[in-house]
Length: 116
Image (cartoon, rainbow, N blue to C red; front, side, top):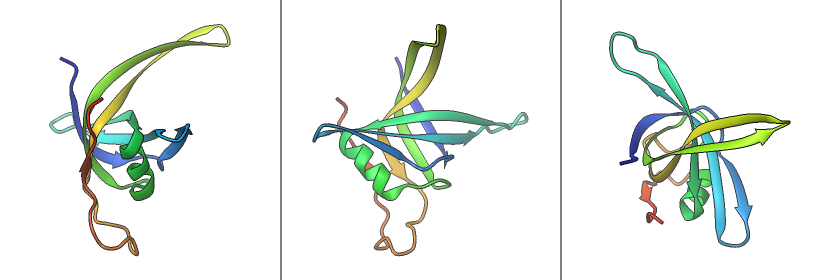
């Protein structure tokens, strides 16, 4: 089973990329505080696709709090002859937990995307 649940704050603004008319990818950083005696902060790279990506880019900004469900994705590539790897979180559900920004219409916009 590959399942991840996180609650944290965005460390970057959302970056949205479009691939044709219907395909979108939003990426951002997320800081998650550990609980307990050795409390530290973990940092994750988050990827969100399609309609949910569009909503994240419209309503989220650095510092805002979210909860998410998703899965881990391990990637490898070569960069200037060096092998590189990374573990990202691909979110399929994102809940906006921060109060809405001033002038945004005043409502929280939680949503869930269909799992593809």
